[in-house]
Image 1 (cartoon, rainbow, N blue to C red):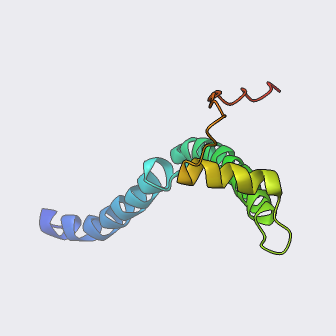
Image 2 (cartoon, rainbow, N blue to C red):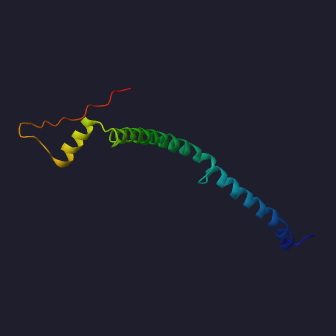
Image 3 (tube, rainbow, N blue to C red):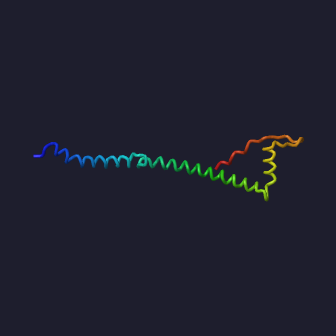
Length: 107
């Protein structure tokens, strides 16, 4: 007959193996990079894609403005607008009326 201590020793190694496998399965399902966190990753990806589209639109707008300010062929209206805004130059016979920018058209 086997003693209880011998039975415990024989059962310890498989039990340890089962615990290790259960630990890895738990992390695979509910861990930081587990199956249940895929929804969060999809949501974050969608948010970042919207943010990327906004940043690309801003970048395109700034690239267009920088092209208008190219010293070889500057847009005279933009140059006058910038000089007047930055330096505060106003002719004595002018009245400044500041307008709010027009809202973007809805898509």
